[in-house]
Image 1: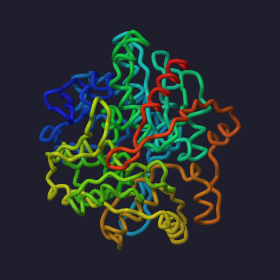
Image 2: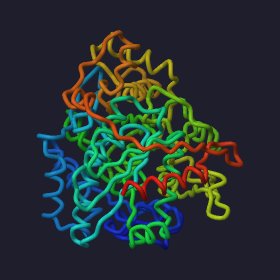
Image 3: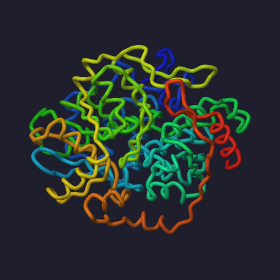
Image 4: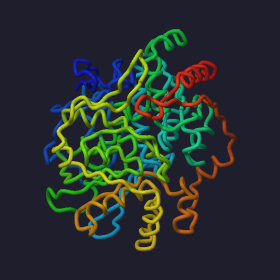
Length: 479
């Protein structure tokens, strides 16, 4: 299988090249184009029942990766990435036919661990094969940074730079990035996640900087949701859930996905296109309402990012919307002048809106409803949700309020990572896992980008040239 740029389907590369490059040179995201998603027979899906996470992952991912890994290579890689001694997924029945899919039992207590461990091991495999090194630059709204940093920590062919918005992550999230040291560098950015993401996209295509600094124009890659190596493993989640719960033969279900940069949501969309019987994908967002507004009106209007308790979902213009539009026959991109972005999220080809609305329901959850949902679920069922899981739960109830449909809500982060919000909601401080307690005592090392952002022509907050210059200086000094 080849992976294509969302900006030009004439640009196609192997998974290996897509992983190492991170982003296409035309600023497109590498993706699986419309009409080329591998489709699984229902007997293959049925054969996953009761099998391990690694086994389910192999059956889902091998059709995408068979030209880049032998069967044995991929099985060994996945067995290592998803060793149940270090990471696991679990299902919890709550009420009616609604279940929680807990994706929080990994090294950094987040669903991001699943994709990060696959990404890190794949990257190490290809770098060893090529005898190369890479600088991985990643932007995070909260959980990605810690997961990627943990997955890449200690790899001798990789250095990792994590950019995070300094005022918009929890203390636990921050310490998962800033206390590691070794080959991991944490950089606090004066701005929001969209600014961090813009910095990453800019440096990925700055081949002159890479060549002049490291002697290799392709030295820099990314582990963000823009990386195909992060997207593909997220297709596994709904397949695993469906394989580990009692249901009638071929019974369809609802998958409720709390969504920020839309990696999880896009993975679930691909699972539906592969043949998994998903009746509806519920895309829950916080007060950053660009996508549900678009589904309602057909107008994609990027707005200023709004602060929210679900901090990892504070994204106004999700990167993976480009892949979603592409899969449904449309195109969205940025307007550049002189190489600089002046407008983001410009739709020049509308996707099939009827198909999008058929497959996806999107709901916005207010900041107040984060807290009230956490309290409601705790009072009724004795279950503590984190703010992101609360968005998934409330959005599912917006779609199917009586819990009479088979449904899975993704729980994406351990509540302990958001202890103040949990205490505010239910008056109880969640127990701190051992790794959180240990990192609370460790020294932090942080670099800072202090320059201010700027306003684009459409009024949105955008990366400034001063911020980019600072980033290059920080990376040059630290690596």
